[in-house]
Length: 265
Ligand SMILES: [Zn+2]
Image (cartoon, rainbow, N blue to C red; front, side, top):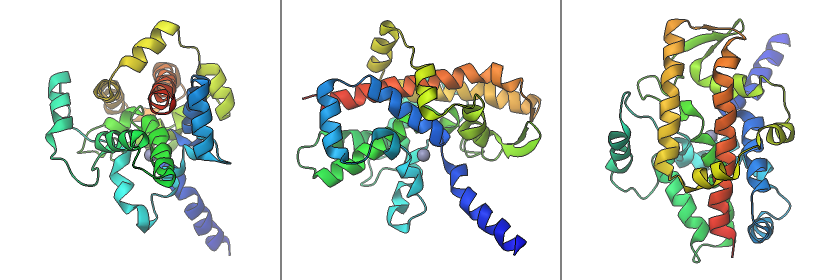
């Protein structure tokens, strides 16, 4: 009985280890975006969402990942690239892959779903699907380890410990660092949503290649820290926490920019 409960518990907990930014991070990003929508965009999004909200749909693409019907969306959550690229080489890698009917990484997937949001030929159901993915994937690509190295699967293959428990570098960024301050998602949104109008203007002007390159660059000090000492204690938060907080804020502000562009009519 005890053994069965343990197995059941492990099964129940398993999907959450796949959530980039965790539930709290994704929902905080969506809430920050809501704070920066125009009233027209807000209205059009609410009509499409019906009884749902942006924070609630933000984690849906992770929830459906294990469903065979959505198997093709698995690679949409991340982008793995070689280490040590400068901006032009990085940008060239993004566009190097031949155009495929189904997106093969986070960059292609985001291009596709952003385009679907604005496509007048798409049905409401197709637009709702695209909206849920836009909300989720803008968050995912701001999680540095989602733009990590192919050889270690974005840090999944790098064992480290966090305050005494064994985990890996990817998981620390997905959950432990985000949850460290102990916020609910609305508390987190309220605490982090403090961008200046100049920052908002600049961040919403940046293109997707820039978003992805910033995440990619943030990986380097994380890989270096893990190589120097794979035992992370509470001192890890003051070192990397501020970058995590800013990535969540940037994701929310940029998501608002994308949604205003598609829904402000
Ligand atoms: Zn994801």
